[in-house]
Length: 237
Image (cartoon, rainbow, N blue to C red):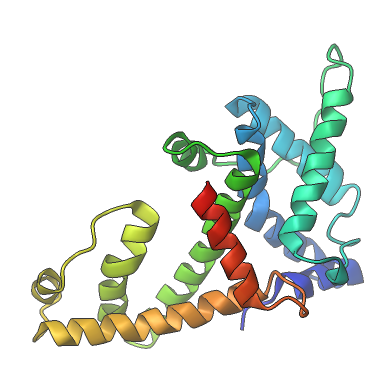
């Protein structure tokens, strides 16, 4: 069972032995959404990376954003976006002649090329860019976890069929592979067999996705509502 965002935040606030590792995991989960928001705000690649590093160092780490987070305040993504908006407003108010100070602590390695490529293919507002990267990171966590589980359970072909029917079209924009082509590629007996494999993993993926979404919202917000909100935001992107 993967740890929820809020249970991980609790570890950070509680000063447990694995505090540093948990904090790094949380940062790596969400830096892409932070970077996408800043890029869509009109900053170039270099400045966006610099501001992302600054937000992580100055707000997330130095000011203890995760440690001060309160689950009763609502969705974690809303908390993060609000903190980012405040940080950017503060940065804007700084004297333009003042050179930005280096961020405190070792900088993260930010691989921004993929995010920049995705943003070039669609016009995003800062909010929709944040939501798109937040959702993509969430979906990729579920994909990676379910792929590993299928390999361990001997369901490699089940996963491959599902990946070609759902995952690759959804994440890479490729065409859905027809069932007859899947039968031939994976040496199956008939199309109904491929369809059954796909449906079984699709149902499992849906459950895992709902569980992952539930990890990012407080208990008083149904995960179905969060999923609907995310999909609605993406439709407007």
